[in-house]
Length: 118
Image (cartoon, rainbow, N blue to C red; front, top):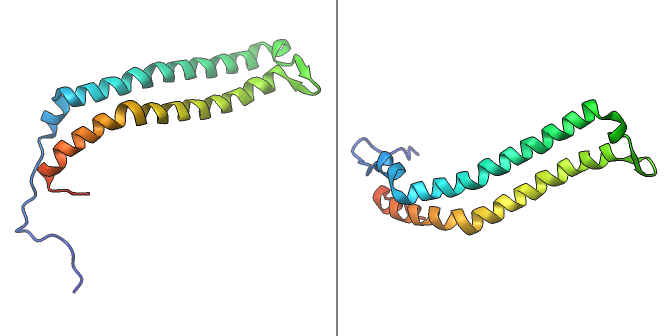
């Protein structure tokens, strides 16, 4: 009736994904991604660990009033949230400028081989 499944007679062109993975273009894309992600991840984890250690062991410092009932601990906690949004916006900008053009080139090379069109 409404079976849209491909028949057994349909042959799908195959892509050698290992060859793509070992290609210089893919290696360059992966390298750019890792050069951004690993250092930023390490920095964010260290920032979070510093906050947790300060909260656990530097009570006097964290409870230092800044203004009114707002103290350093609260400001650093809010800075954790701001950091999350800032890193996300930074990554999106980086990906749009540096990763997406390379991935679009790879996609353009692979889609004719797979028969996929967009």
